[in-house]
Image (cartoon, rainbow, N blue to C red; front, side):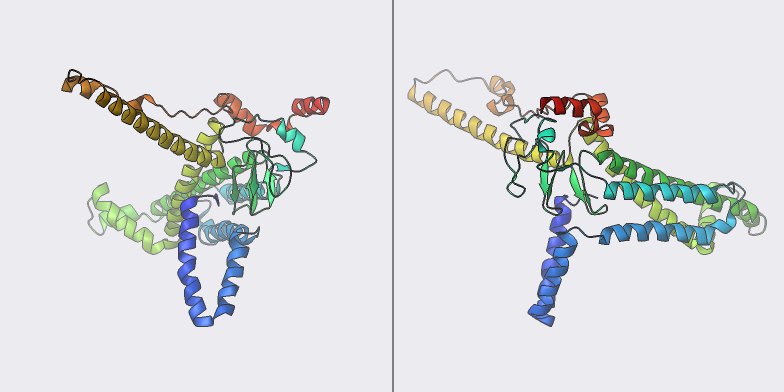
Length: 362
């Protein structure tokens, strides 16, 4: 979902370079320039291509299920109501998609920058007081200028290509609802298709035919292979859709868990990358300090009289200077998981009390 994932960007970049060379060799500079224009439009500017792909995926999947499986509803294990509840589930998913895509992520401009400046203090670690070089306005803490949308966004998380929109303070709640709802829709689709296929097994008496007429032993180990083979041959579309839904549900489930962890600790995707960079830099500084102190100590020992040699066991159990230098993540925005969840569901800039206080202070 996030366009800020480094390995995806690197993989795309590594793939485009040889393609660009091939097109330049075959079509000349005109073809290479055309590819650069397409790359710029698709990767560096807001565009609806990925949004259309989402609509194609969800619409195409629903059409395939309706076209191949609705004739078996109602079935032995599934009621006729699922013809309508499935449509409702997909409809709610599309509404959440539209809400996330077209809602204000928390755009910071000259008219509201004072309000956002008061929302969060600077921690002077990963956020310090500075001006956006593009928008020419002060940068509130936790905000970021999105190079794709060309705007500053409060509590910036990432730019989502699927939504063609930034995910920020005001629409993170919709984004989380979108992910968990689509995860549940996938689970619903898997269970519904499984019930349809189980009903077909029951209605066609496949188990009885295999045991009574083909002499297959009535045990799971013996029945599973022929039953699975029959299902794949007779209902291959449903099986493929179920496999697809399982894969998508795993991806969505993992993505939701990752963002839930961020929400519980009041951290954004952008901030997690910033903390990784800061902690890595701090470790290198600590290593350099420890090395300098060790060198200083060894030089001091050389200038003094030779001391009694320390026992090997004492040296073994003694902590090194580097172990004493701990690297700690001090997230001042983490106020406890209940407060953090409340802040995602009810963003600070949308609270009535917050707006009243800011108008009084202004």
